[in-house]
Image 1 (cartoon, rainbow over the protein chains, first blue to last red):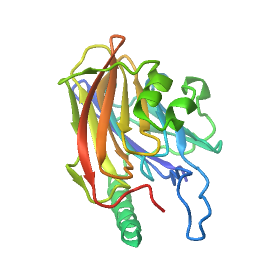
Image 2: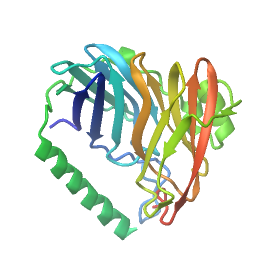
Image 3: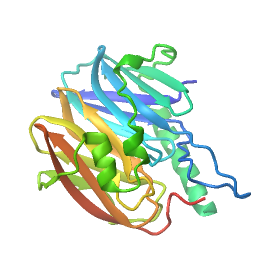
Length: 102
Length: 162
């Protein structure tokens, strides 16, 4: 199952995108009960394409909350267009998902 | 800490429910088509920096900021759970290139930087972790200049402890 849940709605000329990603977002600064450092595991790069064109590209640190939430808005989207969201974390894992604008 | 964990699980279940109920256009299976080329290289210098100035220099090449009342930060006055602090940054500036969000008392102050496409509004909403009471600082790059605004968030349970 995809780690990404995304939906996008267009009202007038503004498309609002909301996305939720399942990810531990472990900073690498925390210790477990035995005092061992919990290794860093967080999303570093994330991007969103609208019909293949970048509408948002972000860099994240470990201080984005676990199971990250992201919302943004852009002009030029219309119902039926495709959005693709991708992420890559510091351990090399990555995922991407597509959603149709409603 | 236990309480924090339970709260976050509850919230997750709630969000899951909301999204499932919406069941809107979740296209799966795009898995292996990640367009790596468009992802900006992660700025290790900036994210590993332990103070705000070094983070800004690493990320944007400059730490000279101009206060702006055209940047709005929406964040709670008091965050009960520092692990999940909702933050919304918007700006009424022209030609906004990027929005960066900083929590100045975190071990690594820079939390995220968003580069906007040409048609993208200067509006970002996300959730960040805050180790303790601190200023949430937004840095907006617009027309080649850096503008800033900040808002204090009091944290009652830190989000970066173990």
